[in-house]
Image 1 (tube, helix red, strand yellow):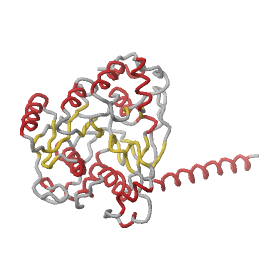
Image 2 (image 1 turned 45 degrees about the vertical axis):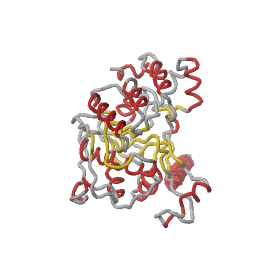
Image 3 (image 1 turned 90 degrees about the horizontal axis):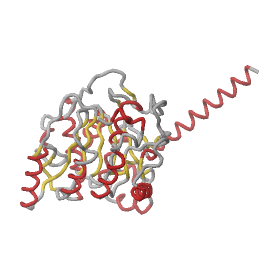
Image 4 (image 1 turned 60 degrees about the vertical axis):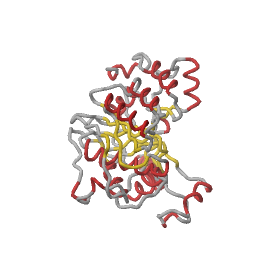
Length: 353
């Protein structure tokens, strides 16, 4: 009887190990996402490590070139035109990728989920513009809010990779003590109270290592593959699908992953498919797997239902971190009106401050 029980346990363990290794090879790890106040599905997951004491990541700056601060891939004379310094006690830095002319989107974020908090800092990552009227408005905006990070590159679609590196450079050089970094686009609604609960309770208030959470593209279609394979600088993928990579509208990083990706990006020439390059090819080379947070995402059809009823009916069973993109400023205000209410999710009350 004991031998039979041992055999069954051994089979279960081996089966679980085989399944995990199979998922690991794919490059995307899917984990259960419905979280509550009494349990944690994210503690001690094999692909990353949660810190159990308060310390900051020490960036190995000696691995970078002496001229690194003024370098942006193939750009040799980079500089920040606008900056906002961090405090030393931040849990979370949110870098919002924004187009310079998206003034309304930025205001809607500042007046909703992006309101000032002692443990969180929000900055907007933008590039340069040729239009002097827009430039003057940006200067006025930054003088008022002091939350724009403007890198010395033209803010056009083919230079989105520069925006990634600018954000990473800002973290490394100007916000080095932050525990987590969340990257979102300016049309994404962030459930900030759920995010803070998630980081403090489901993960660790002291940070983590080797962590990359996002909603991944797990396999590019043949059409998508053909779109970039002939101009790809990655010969290992010329005859196959590219590795899983994060959809560009949201991703959560630990500081060490920021540094690893930044270091590799700085060695490369410009490549315009920024999400594939950064969180796909380079992340796989560095053996940093994507942790799928698809179950922590509020999808568009659910957003529409919530806005139609002006309430969150699933409040006792499920939380989410952010909504899918294409959230207009009007929807941003409407969603915030619902989710800023401390009674919307009872377990989040301690984070409504």
